[in-house]
Image 1 (cartoon, rainbow, N blue to C red):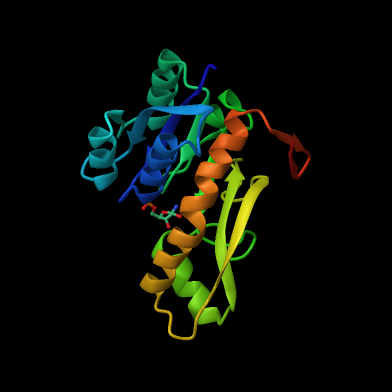
Image 2 (cartoon, rainbow, N blue to C red):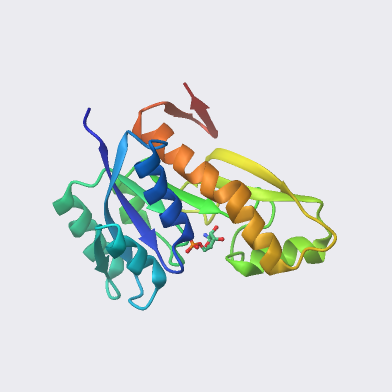
Length: 202
Ligand code: GRF
């Protein structure tokens, strides 16, 4: 069966990328293959993870959108996964990949999302607010930051003893690294229908 060619965009440690690589190996993902890992930074561990898995990497620092679009089209990429990617994806890319760009966000959108809500800052705000429940969200990317249609969410309890770092790790382990591979398999196997603001899973 033809696998959907998938590009993963990264900007950091790449733990979500690693979850995708492991899911392809373990058979959690069977309908997609990671054909390339793309970053806007060259000194990040996510690129090491890609190289160790034998996946092509590409660092694009200038004129990102135009450069990445032609690279993706040349490679025949059909699905883009933002996995800890800290740059904004623009209109050109979104229009070229309708409902084929997904992002993992470390909160239960619409809580604790949008401008300035990324990485550890999200968990700092969750704890400061006194929230009892947080988690992760996979959503389709739209022009509104973190505002696209939600595909999957998974909740994680906030404990009184949590520090931002402890909470971040638990959200990754118990939510992000589970729902992102699941989302990639759902989209690449054609089981997701987007109807207005609702993602229907068949
Ligand atoms: C994760 O919390 C992810 O949700 C956010 O970036 C953080 C780092 O991700 N988008 P990774 O370890 O680089 O995958």
